[in-house]
Structure formats: C-alpha cells, structure tokens
Image (cartoon, rainbow, N blue to C red; front, side, top):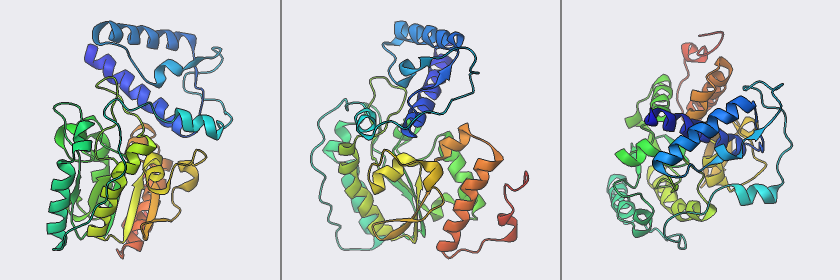
Length: 313
C-alpha cells in the first residue's frame, strides 16, 4: 500500500512539475481531490519523512471545475519563473565546468576514455545517491542520430544506463518504428547524474549550474559520435542545450529545426509526455518529427511509415 501511494504521488508530482515548466502556475482541483492528496501525503510523511514537490502547491478552486480541467492561466513573469525552476541542490557545491580534451585514437577508444573519465568524476559521484550510479550514455559511436534527454531518473541511476524505465521502453519502440535498434543510435542525457531530491522518489529540473557542469561531457560525446541529427527529448533537454528560456513551450517549438554544436537539432516531446498524453494526435506529432529526423539523417521513409498514427493506424 505504501509503495502504491508513493508511486501515485510521484506520478502526480512529475506531472505538476512538467506543467509548471510549461508555464502553468495553478491547477484547478476539487476540494475532495485535494483532501485525498493531503491525506496520502500525511500518511507518507508519517512513514517516510516529509513529502516534497509541487503537490503542496496545488490550489483549491470551486468544485465547478472538473478534476481533469485546467483553466487558461497567464504566463508567469520571467524573473519569478527563473527563481522557481529548481530547488537548491542537496549535495556538494557545483564547481566551474570541466575542460574536456579528448585523446587521440579511434572513436571507440575516445568514447571508452570519456566514459571512464565521467564515471570516475569526483563531482558527478558527489551528487549520486549512495548505491546509485553515474549515467553516461549508450549506443553506436558512429550513429547518425543522437537522442538526448534531460537526465537520469530512478530506474536509470540504478542500472547506470539512460532511458531504461517506462519512458525508455517507449523510446525503444519509437526507434524500432524508425527501422533502427538502440544499438544503431546513440542515447544520452544532458545530466550525468539524477538531480538530488530530499526523498528517494520524485524528480526535478537540473539547475543552470548542474547543466553547465555536465554540458562539456555531452559536447565531447557529440564530438566523438558526430551525428547528422540530434533529437532533444522534452523541454528540459532543449533548455539544457539551447539555454534556459522561461517563455519556451514545447507545443510551439517541436517539429522546428534548431542547431547545437553545429548539428541540426529536432525538439520533440519527451516519451514520458506521451505516456501521460496517449492520444493519436500527440503520437502523430512525435512521429512527424521522427520522419523529419529520418530524412535529415539520409534514411528512406516508407509509405507504410508515413501512414503510422493516421486515422488510428
């Protein structure tokens, strides 16, 4: 029962975090729903300490709003959004970003060196929860497509590999629909550790200092792989690559080419967003982005693939 409540509150916290990142400052809920959330949080607090996160920020509205409705809200002021975008990190201070100079050698040899360098980083390891792992990246060192997420989650820091949880399983299916395997692409994150939280569950956006420290490692991965296309999965990944912009919304930027480190970059929704918004329209939007990526990478898009997620296909 405890594990189930924790999972439900974690899912709710993650959803509210992402909505806040999209610019929402309030969510309409019924008094009955808020009472149930408070009761569940109270039980978890009694058993496992305080429950942190955006759950406590939900604001009661009159019951005329259904629990599924969210009225339109004005965009937050940029200054306030910048202050609220992430809690203070829990671990050691973040130093200046490292200077990464790749040694001479083949791409495979360079990637092996970089992996060992990152996994041994005192800074990265200082921010990893005891018993968890720094998460580097996986895939082909000559991949044409580089999938980039924001950072590892709970499943990823346990296994030490990016995108292995439910969202990662969906990403694998997307890659397979493109006619590829995980071994033929490269998958990494901006962050090399899971941003710390006061509890074992829940996620938060990395701070600008955390992102800045890890970015040279990502640039080095890109310099080795030299992909033809980068796919940025979710707004936090886009902000990590292109710089934080409080007005940026995924609904406006997905499907539109950008550039990072001289490589064409395609922003699209994070697979976890698809898990929560599993409509045919959203699936088709992501698939249209992937077809653009395939074409830019020099791949042939078949007529069958062009018909995916059209009219229930």
